Amino acid sequence: MVDRGQRKSGFWDRLVSQWKANKTVYNPPSTIRNFYQNFILRYLSGEDLTGVPQAALKLIRDPALRRRLMAEGRVAGDRASDIGETFLKKLDEKAVEVYSDADRLAAAIMSEATGKPPVRR
Image 1 (cartoon, rainbow, N blue to C red):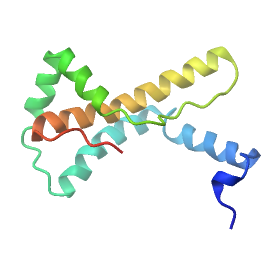
Image 2 (image 1 turned 60 degrees about the horizontal axis):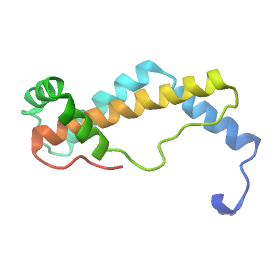
Image 3 (image 1 turned 60 degrees about the vertical axis):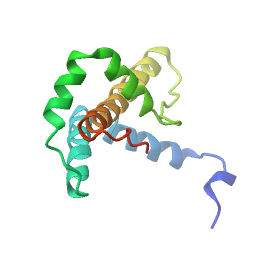
Image 4 (image 1 turned 180 degrees about the vertical axis):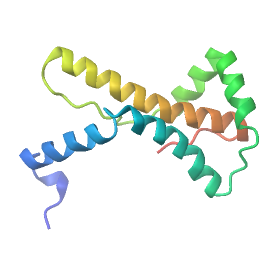
């Protein structure tokens, strides 16, 4: 088996990558589901979610705290594919930003609700 890091990205790799992006990043319902699934998975792992509503309100009222916690939740390698054309590239970047922000917002709310640092993935 060839290590993925040793071979060049071919047509099928790019095609699958674009298909995955279309099913997640470019799909608004997927962003919403992903946001809620972050809470569901934390609940299923035994996390106490009783503080989530208060934490969400606090982050709505305090943009500086929200920005700080969301910045702490940033991960290296947030995907932004290079499609080539300026308009599509900007659209792609915005879609990735919105999708990633939903993840970071969920992590910020959980951080505020539980008093634990945001989870990095």
